[in-house]
Amino acid sequence: MQDALHHSSIVLFKSLGLDHRDMRVQVTIGVQQPERVDAEVVAAEMPRGNPEVKVVHGGLNVHDPDNATTHVIATAGIAAFLPIEDGAWRLCEPAP
Image (cartoon, rainbow, N blue to C red):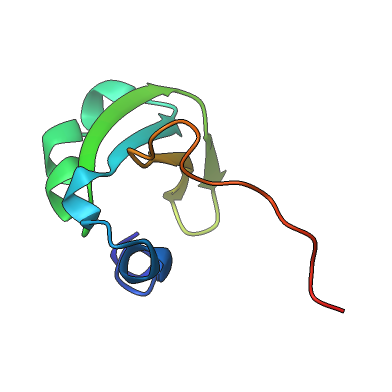
């Protein structure tokens, strides 16, 4: 997760003159044992915005009997919201 988060890039902050700390970030993580995920630790790892982390039942555990291990597969969704005033932007025709 850290690799994906720290290599993400949202270039529009500078273009729009916004501070990334004003972004609200909703993170939902699905795992088979949600009680074992520390949402506060996940939130602390978010490099941008004000994170809200919710952990739910989902994902998949795959047991490997040959090696006596279980692989935990988590699914995550991230939604980001920027405080853009209503009517501040309009769509225009693309340049030819």
